[in-house]
Length: 385
Figure 1 (cartoon, rainbow, N blue to C red):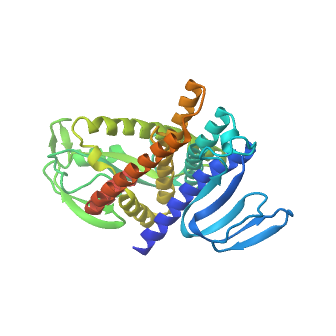
Figure 2: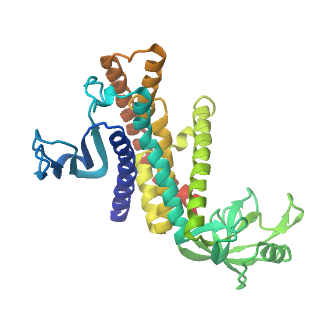
Figure 3: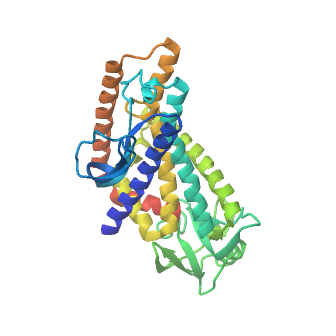
């Protein structure tokens, strides 16, 4: 439980901090004043800033600051994520050259988009780091530059009503069969086909534990050959040199982002059809449980999961919904079309209502998560095994 809490806080902090860092860095590049850049959420514990005499000053507690010449850098008591307070982000100070509201539309759009871009970059970095350390991967498309260790055979699908159904599961690692170790798919397929109607002892690893399961091969109607009704793949720990890891890491991030876009499309479509996918959405509790499971499985698994969460955060934030970065971008589009900005009070009201609805959605999904914790754990094991 403690590991789950620590891992969840660490992962969430990295994702949110990277997102806010994107906003902060881009705003500074365009000469926009960032009044405060904080790690964690208020109340403030401590911080430092440069005063009007250009001297660095330490700051303790929630004390109001009136002599800061630039950004206050703070550490806050709630150790989750971070924030950046940008001057003029709510439309004030339109005549001040260092105000967000004074900047050109394209500059404001880039500042708003920078958090999303940073989350995508973070995902690429994390995937790259995982590939340098060595990641579990199917061995059918391993580049020449990569090195492979611990080759194994893994179950990637179990057919319904097959001999293995209900006994073997997707993600199981086949350690041995009848005391023989196989590392090549075809060798295991041939051996199984030769044992029709004869019990075979499979030693498999599931969730870090080994167990023995006896399955009797039968003639599989789909193939007309002897088997137990599973699809298998050769897997191993694949390690890339740094230059290849960077290329394949960012390539993986783009491919995964597109997969998430397609998944979101299917999710939205299911809301108006059978709602089967809508029932599988995870909220904070579900994500925390999955994060803890990844931490138990290993550091590389946690890296992968964090990268995927970073891409999800990027996509969700880019949706044109009130209170999100995409919603603020939508108002910039309206401003460009109309030739003048939407009234500040109107935009603030829309974002406030959107935020309330978003919190209600999070609350509803959280209640559902509590009832589905075991289900999320099983699904993630299948995804990363």
